[in-house]
Each structure stands twice: as structure tokens, then as C-alpha cells.
Image (cartoon, rainbow, N blue to C red; front, side, top):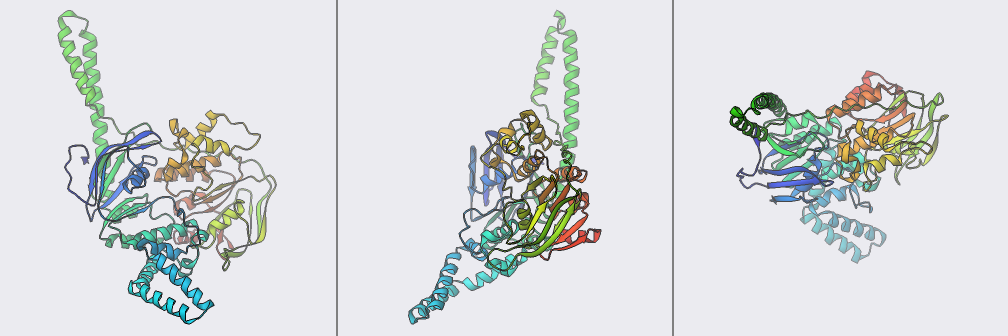
Length: 551
């Protein structure tokens, strides 16, 4: 193990960090970090949810500023944030154009397309000549070859070719995430900073990505809770050591794969626990001697000497790792409702082209669980948004049963006000006529490890995992007996996923959910499966689990 500090001499690489300090919401989360990333390094950044990994990535990628220290970058950087939304491009730009923008080829393609449309509308000699010249220039620049490469990368990540010609704004959250990842990989950057890159990827797309990263010749820094990716793609670990919300984080470096890091980390923590115990025992022993003899004049000098030794030991004292807080999550019992919770009839949805899905018809009874399966783009998120009242179906209708109250978890955290604090967000979800004190709201947030001064922090500063926890906590105040859950375990670390799954497995309300997490699906024990986009309904069996990670 190497603790990275002020004195370490580093060789220039593609990324050099010196004495870097980073804050979140006015709280110091990384202090005096110093490390270097060489051209072919494969580095994993690990730590608990909320430790500050995502914020540190934003700083390294140039999207945020540190409060102190220096960052030296060399070459091009490709940064994939956790948030799947692609800001500022809902202007009709197609998915393939956005991918091509990674090499600034998108404008040439859009110009060529406009000239083609003009030529088709008016095939004058002038328009034909303009199109021919533009096409020749596009070809000479390698545009056609680049577009083929871009489509190949997108296909590897599971994007159907026909979806690439659609506007980015009509794609699902998972598809937009794949498009953004495709753009970053296509750009050919010298350094990749990827924050949870396997979110929304099925097993084939994940395997393709692992193969790409194995062959990637640049430097890689990755944040992920995907243990397979960490083991396959990295050869070095930077551990952000920050186990408590009020603690200051430090970077600790480990050589080797993630599995090797876990073994080394466990050994280090065991040694630190033993050393801390021995130090405390020795301090207590010496203090006992001082207390016994300090008042006696003949032994005052000896007591004073021992006190100096105690002070020295206190200054050198090792803080034993706590191992982080284990979540204790319990969803409130659902209020009573009718036998039928929801009934849908012939739902159909499209976005200006062919329907994404059509003729979706099903019903769900009290306490039942419906698993929605389908490939990316099959309309899973669109269906949940319709049922949640966030958008409308083109055809068909649905109705809730007697006294049904519905809560919705959006995979992109659309319902979070990023400029509001955690307390303000959860207070907004309290139903009319229900009185919950600030103490009670803090208690709900505390179940998800969101406590102390963090509750007054703006939600936009949270990590992806913390946003997930906040959104789940907000479901608890709604007095819901039906939950719509769209990938609720994304960005959660393994202990948190387990805690949420256990809590929902024992909840007695009805659930309609989308998930690629096989273990989570097993915990929830679905009663029915809805296969999208066909709308086929079947009873759940373990045979369906094989499709969970594939869909």
C-alpha cells in the first residue's frame, strides 16, 4: 500500500494531480491528493457511496474546480458522467450526429443531409452540383468511413441501427446513455474517465465494452460497482478513504486487480484495527500510571514524562476503519386498497415514427409484482412514465383501482429538484393532510445513510448513488400502495442494493418494475412478466431470469 502525499515525486503522465483538495457542499471530502496516471494505466476509483468519487471525477475532467492543488492534463479527455441525460442537444439532432460530434464530423453530415433534401425538392443543376461537391468533401475527410465506425461502436453497445437516425430527445434514458458512451469511445481520446459505464447495458453490450477497454491503448480511469468490469479492465486502484460523512477523504493506492485490492484492503484494515487497539491499550495503561503516581511529589517528574509519551502516542494514533454504515431500510406498510390495483387497455406510444409499443394490456392485483422486460428502446421507461402521469399514451387508457396511491422512481431522477436541499425535496412529497416533522423526515433520509448536515445540501451536488437513495426515501412519504420502479438499484454499492432489495421484498404493496439486476429481481419475487414491446403477459418463473441481464 502507498499513501499518496506531499513528498511523492511523480513522473509526468497524461494526468498529474498534486496536493488536490475537493469540497462538496462546503465540506472537504478530498485533501491533498497526489497521484499520476501514465498513458496506458488502467485505474479504478473506489469508495463508498457519497465518498466523493463522482465529484473528484468532475474535477479531473475539468467540469468542476478544486479548492486547492494542481491538475496537469495532456491529450484529449473523454468524460462519461453518471447522469445519462445529454444536456443541450434536444434540438432535433439525431443520435448518429451526436456520436459523430466526438470528432467534429456532425456539422458536415448535417450540411450534407440538408443539401440532399434541397436537391430532392429542386433537382436543378446548381443544387446537384452543390450536393456532389459536399459529398466529395465529406468522403475525402473520411466521413463515410467514420460514420461506419460510429455505427459499429453503437451496435456493439446495443443500439439498433434504426434508432441512431432518431432524434436524441425521443430516445430512452438507457439509449441516450449508450449514445453518449458511443460518442466518447468514438472520439479516440487519450484518456477516458468513465463513471458507471455499464449502467443500462445488457450482458452482450457489457461484454463488448470489456473487450473494447482491454484493447484500448490510452489511459482509463473508471468508477464502477460492476465487479467484473473492475477485475477485467483495471490494474491499479485508487481508494478514496472516507468512511464517514464528517470525515476528510484521502487517496490510497493499491496495485493489481480489484479482487487483489479487496484482499490487500482487508489485510490493511485488519492491521489498522489491531494497531489502534494496541495504541489505545498502551495509552490507557500509561494514563493509569499517571493517575496513580502523579499526585506524589517524589514521582511527579516521572508522571510528567509519561504524560509527554501519552501525548506523542495520541498524535500518532491510528483511526480504526469503521467499515461504513449498514443501511436499515423499512418501507411503511401500504394503505388498504381495492383488489385490482391497475388496469391498462391497448396502450400505444410513438415519437413521430413507428410505435415504440402498441396494444399493451394487463391488470395487476393487490400485492402483486410485475416485471417489465424488453430490449433497450422497447418502451419500458415510456410505459412507466405513462402510468406515472409524466406523459400520455397515443392510444389506449388505464385506470387505478379503489384508493390506489402511486409512487414513481424515475431512472434519471427527473423528479429531483437539483437546486433544492434533500429536506426540501422530501418535504415536497408529503401528501396533503399529512403532518411530518423535520425530525421524522430526517429519520427517513437517515435510513438511507443521508444524515447530519447532508440533508441541507443541494441535491445537485449528490453522487449518483446518493440521488438514488434520496429518490427512494421520497417514495416513503407518499403513503403509496403501488410503486413504479425504473432501475432503482443503478449506482448503488452492493450493501445498499441488498438493503433496498430486502426492504422491498417484505413490502406488501404492488410493484411494477424494470431492472437489469438479477439478484434484485430474485429478491422481489415477481408474480407476472410483461414482455415489451409486444405486450405479452406471462406468469413469472425462474426461466425468465436468464433474460433479465440480457434485456
